[in-house]
Amino acid sequence: MEHEPHLEAIDINGELFDVVKQERLLPGMVLKSQARDAYARLGPKESALEEQIHTVSLHERGFPVARVLDSGEYGEDQWYFIEEALGNLTFSEQFKQEYQQLGYVSDTTHEKYLAVLHNYLQAQYNPANATSVSIEDFIESAIPDSTILANYSQLGGNVERYKQAIAKAEAELHDYPMGVLQFDLNPFNMLDGGVIDFELVGYGPLGYDVLLCSKWHRWFTSDQTSKYHLNYLLSPEQIAASEALVVEIAKQRGLPNPLKHLEAFTFIKTTWGFSSDKTLDEEPASKRDFYKYRAGLLTHCVESYLHDQPIDVLAFPEFRV
Image 1: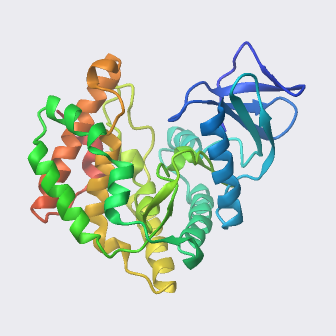
Image 2: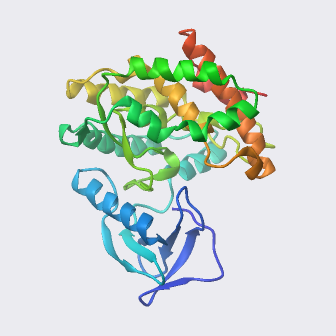
């Protein structure tokens, strides 16, 4: 995992760790040991301990996650857990480096990426990891109205149309099988040895996250003046290979073809990509501009989905507001 150097290291029981991430989606930091191939998660006890419990459980369920090596109290109401390293560079960084050097992502690197997705899918589609959680529960957990409506309205979005699209997605996916989701599965959170960052783990539609994982870079603008711009492109053939993988494992398990629900999944993912626990006024200017872009994508998805039209994710980076 790539990380930025910091002047100060954190001492955990005599072992020094460099700070990889000061902030995450949830409170806490990611640290890397100076002495061995291991990382640590350090944060408020309640959230860090919960993530540790999830990580151990996921490993036991067959998901390609790191083994937890050690854990314990740290300071006042802080908790750490140390886990084995799954690699040095995320696939996002590998893809970015190759794209800058070659103008494309090599099939060799992409095959390694697909191998991780394969292992993840085998666990996700395992009947032992199924759940009776409803699609309504998933929607409420992943994209609650409190993280969408106010900001979307402020940026000119039609809230009533959005609600109609949500209702349509819930009806379409009412009987769709559900299982464990990482919730933020994308090449930023994947390394040669597996998947990291399960702080948002929950339940949702089987195959939803893997089906869109290889496309996630397309939710970033090609406008290089934006802080949040596109860094690489997977080819349509590479994206198709990941889709075929999801379909094949679903077929092996006797489960529905997730591609039949691609438009609903894409709409939901676009909504998730726009969601925020902060108001627009609380975000820095660069992030507010990016939210305008994501709001434009969301409106495009809402209207396309309600009109039963295909949603072309590959065209997203060229979208302008």
